[in-house]
Each structure stands twice: as structure tokens, then as C-alpha cells.
Image 1: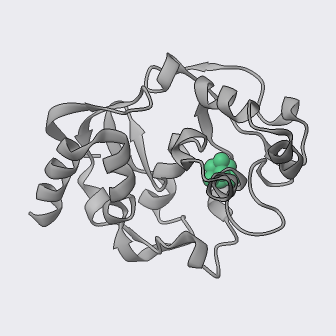
Image 2: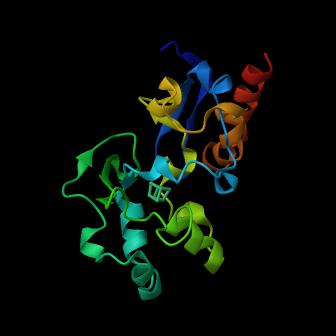
Image 3: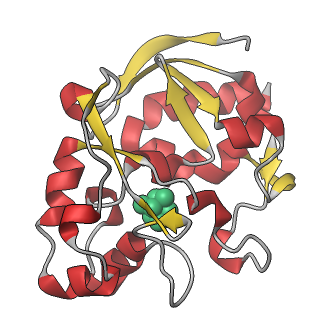
Length: 193
Ligand code: SF4
């Protein structure tokens, strides 16, 4: 992987990570992008669960009983055992959402997509406050301060890889929310170059 250093460091508003470099493949790799309009993926990108910082874990556990009933799995089973130290996450640690019956515990079994995202839209809550950062950025991700393609996007095993906007274009609005206009200006210049 060849990384390009950025002109500044860009901390995430959620408390981590800090982005200092980018893998230029985010400008060339493509994917379907419009997830809820996809007719063929069966939400398979949510099969493996996701890492989530401890503050986000607490915010999910604080959601009302109606959300918990919708998940349909006891709150004690929402996350795998153990906490992993990781300086890139807010609070320098993360847990991981549990996989139940072959998918993330928060995947909507009755419909499509993510129960957390759906709940936020329904309740008029900003989904950024309760949906894991890693899920929102996917299929972009971060690794040691660099913005990089997820493994599935990089190796082409992501079911919707190949056609559509670039990973960067797909995540551009989320990058603006999390990291601000300075990062967008640098990345836009690279994308146009
Ligand atoms: S939290 Fe939501 S978007 Fe993330 S893996 Fe689970 S179901 Fe998918």
C-alpha cells in the first residue's frame, strides 16, 4: 500500500481517529454506493459485525426499551466479550458488535439495512450520534492514521465492488461531517488531479 501524506492532521469530531495520510486507491476503487437501493447485496457487508468505541456502546445501551425490543436480542449479548485497546478509537479502546445468526446483531432482519440507522431516522436523531463510525465510513476505513479502502473493497470481495462512484465520492459527505472541510479540500484536490 502506497500512502500519500496530507498537509495537516485531521482529528475526528467523535474523538478519534486522526487522519494524516490517504491511500490513493480510494479515488479509483468503485462500488454501488446507494446501499438502500441495492437489490442484490442482502446487506452482506454487515455479516461480520463492527468495532465500536466505548462511548458509542454506552449511547446504544442508553436507547429506550422500544429500540431494545426491536433488536430482539438481550442487551447483554449485543457485544462480544472483552475490550481491545486501540489508540485510533475515541477513548483509545473498542468493543465489537456480536454476530447473531450470521449477521451483526443490529442488522434489520425484518427489512433492510441497519436497525441503528433506521431508528435514528425514525426518531429524528442524528445517526452519527449512535451508529458506529466504522459502519458509517464503510467501505472506507482508517488504519494507523491513514484513510484506506476496507479489505473487501481493496480485494474486490465486497459484493457491490467495481461499478459506480469511487469510495471517496461515496463517503465524501461523511468525511466532511467527521473530519471537516480542510480534509475535504485536500482530498478533492487529489481526486481532481
Ligand atoms: S452496526 Fe449497523 S451498519 Fe454496522 S455492521 Fe451492524 S448492522 Fe451493519
